Image 1 (spheres, rainbow, N blue to C red):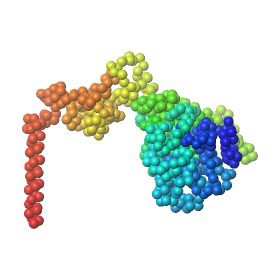
Image 2 (image 1 turned 120 degrees about the vertical axis):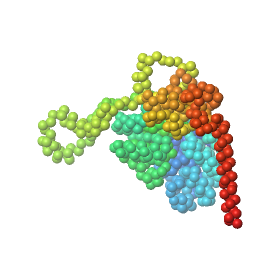
Image 3 (image 1 turned 120 degrees about the horizontal axis):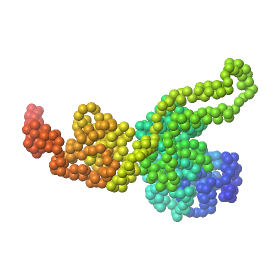
Image 4 (image 1 turned 45 degrees about the vertical axis):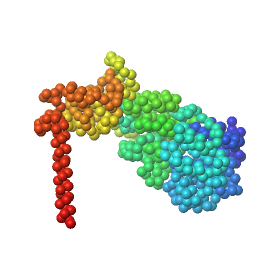
Length: 627
């Protein structure tokens, strides 16, 4: 199949041939003929980088009447970067179409300039939702002659909160128009837009719904949370020719990771919403021109960054939404090339890996974090490869050979190689000297080797089992209060400081569940902490604590918030600490002269009443004096 056989016009064929387009991609084979020959609308589920812009761009350009200088096609994209990318591609495709004008409309640039261009006459508008709505409300853009509307990256517009804007915009275009929606996934909100605004849409699925890009391998490394950055550096060192995006969850984390990489000598920079538009443009320009090897970015900031030859996408922790992972991984392995999607995860995220595998229909490979030996070997071979393939300018270099040869003639060939390699790698060798292994899996296998496997009385997920296991060098402690009780990390630290006597307790990882919590303390401190917390009180709830046990189903035990001691009376009955089997608070009340808690409560109410009378008396005196 050729573009000519799809019905693409001669002037467009000439332009795309110069751009290197030879044979249509699957999405283009399905969408182009439909848009040129059919009246029904189109919903195309296709990943990023599958050739969507040409799929809708070529037929849209072919349907434009250049003699009419009014907007005839509207393309809506979620970000400024994607808007500019689409506008640039359409300009390239229409190189040989005289009189055709494409206008990108987006926030962050002069609206007056965009208004002037609109008044001069344009046939295609490529816009972000916010700026387009602004122009509609000002009455400076008229969409009544639009015959084609394209929503690109529809699911991403949903994630960015543009659904209401899209609904508003679509009420300003004619009912009788052709509409196309491109999306990597089809969440319910997007399906609602299709049902409301589209006419009997034909759905084309490129691959499988929610499937990751075909040429992408999905691998993950499991490490402790504290070792994630070390693992990231090892991954970068193990892939000397890496050219990739590192995705982080927040702007702050993005900037922190980028700053660390720069300080450690990596060719990296950050891209996030706190940067000015000029800074973002500068960073993206450097990355596109390969002056940067690693771009650390948030999901929103990276939208529209169209780079076709990324080798790696690195997830510095998995996103909450599977669709977001699909978007991330789809940025590599484009245009028939292979790519790698790497995830650096903690054991608690193993459940997310399983969920993503089900949704994208692909298996993740669990890999060991590259060891120092493998990294150094890989780097050495890379250097040897570069030496072998370097272009030598014989005419220039020959002028310097005699002097250098005379200075180094006492060295044998082997000695020379050793010195060249040492010159390049001494810093790397020093850095990785005695470096430890980082994998959680390796450590756990070592611990479990030869141990008898105990069966749990209740079935639980691997994620739940991992949650019960402390980090190496730590005890894992259970306590029967959680988020549903209003119990958070600060409350736990306060309880430990209040109840545990003696040496200061160092608290590690904390997992707060609805009905209970699990936390780490240094090895050997677990029993002391559990004993101290047991039978203490949290806002009227008697606490129970113990060393976490893999055989117990704590979730079932605490269902409904009952916990180990379901009532105060039961807890009080079981309390055998101190004199008379009473807890510290009751003992303290008795020392202060209160026989019961009720007596203390009555005394408190009386004191409040006296205070209230005193305040009213003072107020009355003040008013009399004022009069």
